[in-house]
Length: 94
Image 1 (cartoon, helix red, strand yellow):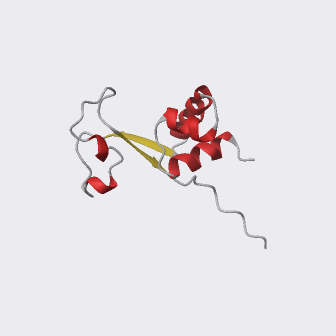
Image 2 (cartoon, one colour):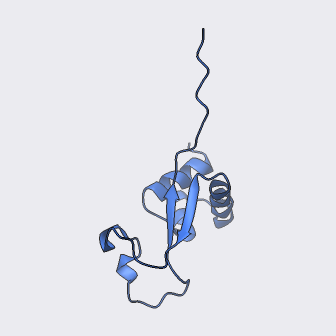
Image 3 (cartoon, one colour):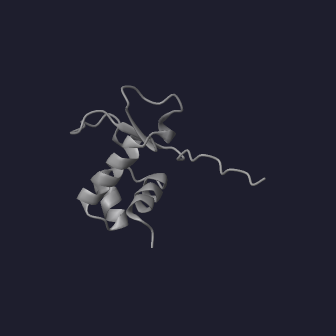
């Protein structure tokens, strides 16, 4: 069984980026998803960037492309980027 952190990570990596969507896909409570996402943001493993303009890579790479031109209730789309955690290299045995 995956930990809640790994479940959220995997779900975001699969392209599900709303908290409600992550909760539904993982079976976790929304409060747990909020805590995990806050942890990932605080540790730098997840970054969230509010998009004020469209990505330069065109609409195909934009998660909000299906909503373009539609009124948004939540404001501008937010780009979530997962980063690999940086772990110190293991010490070499001599």
